[in-house]
Image (cartoon, rainbow over all chains, first blue to last red):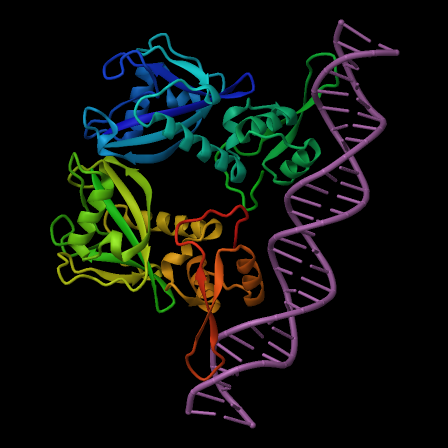
Length: 215
Length: 215
DNA sequence: TCAAAAGTGTTCAGGATACACCCATGC
DNA sequence: GCATGGGTGTATCCTGAACACTTTTGA
């Protein structure tokens, strides 16, 4: 059994995914999603942490703000070595630092410019993107991509990046504010030669599900 | 690694789940969700079929009309024998016959009247119910619970049973018919001393996702 | 004074909800 | 003719979508 990690963050207004260059065969030096063996007696969640930390220097508990199990992929032919089962996780964060101790040369790359990937890694990333899109529409999961205080424009931009479409500014604000997920702070964000923007914060940093969905 | 099967059908206007009485320790003779070991080299999907058939006589490929992987539960303490990981599946069907060859005395019981269950089986069933409820609202998955030709009242009743709430007859019909998931047949269903009901059929028996959700 | 992003309201259309009576049948 | 479930339409509300100008700031 193996565990794979699909880790997203937004860089340069693009959704990017964490890949590594594999240090070992098969597919040595090829880019791939970080992953590894899950020995008996270790939970998949613990294996995720151990493997991601070792291979990329990212600590999923400290460096990510949202983690979710995705799916258990199940193909005898999946791996030339005969792996049958891979439990995949998705994680999201912000300003994720790649460790110097990383064993597999980690790097982020835009999900729309993926290199050739081994096994079914491309499918796994697609699956993760779809899940992420869905989560944004009915939860507050977007908090994982934002600083603790943020402007409405930053919030909207995160949605646009992940959903892959532009949104109307007035409608977006009206709707999002009506959900009671965020509140005004009395701080402003000043930057550049234009009017400062009000900073907002989430009322909860835990995952909240909405009754009315959002897009 | 183990595989667990949560199998639903509607009997007597109640959502019911398939349980077995375990033939072996631990928890011998206790009711539980059917499940078993998944040896290396067998996909979890194949293990699901093999285990369910052996323990309950239900062939998931032939006797169920909808199957979906649910979640991979992950607790070292889950099983006194030290199991760490269980891949769970949900299946739905109609008039499911329990096999004579079953090794573990299978029976259906209403999900609202569950006996004490071992491990985290109660959580798994709750998880499955929630997933099922969600699926009904944005897919045509309800077909799994219905005969190939059915009346609108039967359809509505299936929704009411699974969602656990009553729906308005006129609004239900208006909305469901507008989704283009079903079409009229020219057959009628006659039964009892009242007006016969028109029979409908699904336009597709494959899973279809709706853009507009339903409840 | 100019460029750049922040911020703000109204109108309109379509879906959601609430609600009550007539119809066809078997006995 | 009566009991039983089948079948139908309208009015109202609310949400979603489209859309353009004023405000505040730094240079």
